[in-house]
Image 1 (cartoon, helix red, strand yellow):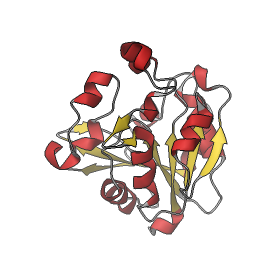
Image 2 (image 1 turned 120 degrees about the vertical axis):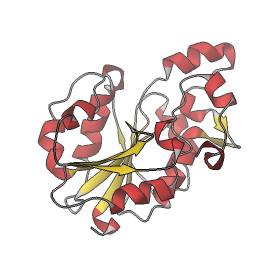
Image 3 (image 1 turned 90 degrees about the horizontal axis):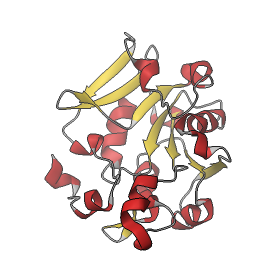
Length: 207
């Protein structure tokens, strides 16, 4: 399927409480604003999404929305704001899916704290999508990771999600999920603490 029929949704609404508590007085307003290689974490993810040749990119904001949007200034993005972000990831995923244009057949859902996910990995996942698939998931060393591409056909199921549940349990046991073996450890690396960020290596060193 052409990438022109697939978009991206970046979830950046969470508070990142664990990161901010560990950082103490040095904590940024959002962990997604913490710098890696000279750029905020969220900017790395958004740059990758914008470079993957997809139909468009929707960003779901919440906590510290103004600061997060500022970090993304100049990129071709659409924004939706989640006032209920404290309820968990499900509310953001539902908002993002609700904002999808009718022309999108699927969306690659990205998390804002995975700065090593690059345009190549996003493209690999997008190119593996098939009409009869509910989702495409990357698998690194036998374990499913992110980002996950979700078919627009899952919208009714996603609308029923609550709390901090993502789409993972919706895909469990389904025969129509396409698994793609990847060599990039980035598919399994997110940033939960300042220490994890400090020890983060470039994706070329993680493979």
